[in-house]
Image 1 (cartoon, one colour):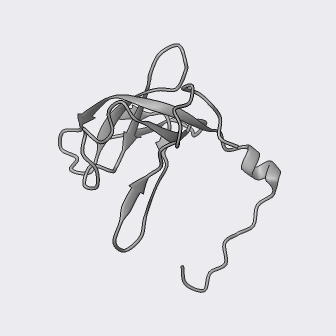
Image 2 (spheres, rainbow, N blue to C red; image 1 turned 30 degrees about the vertical axis):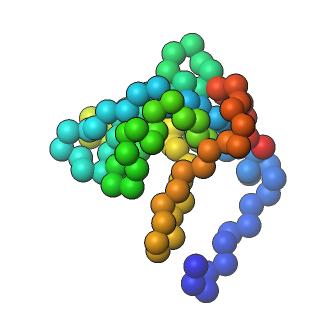
Length: 114
């Protein structure tokens, strides 16, 4: 992490970030973008959300479909390769490994993390 100290935030700052559990319903490869997947995610809303994620080089479609992951759900929509993305899957990687985070128990889609 180097010598930079992370900027401290207040609990009120953290509370602004909405993180919810969602189930990946389908995954498509985004043509012409070697890192992107287009995810359809059930977040307990009226209809599934489209979320684009640059995780294709790390994880297969089969490892995503039907599984639950945490998503940041209140980000401003972003257009990537002409497609709208309405959220962000949470992931981490170090020098050797990439990982997504799964709940240890199945939760209702849309459950907020806190």
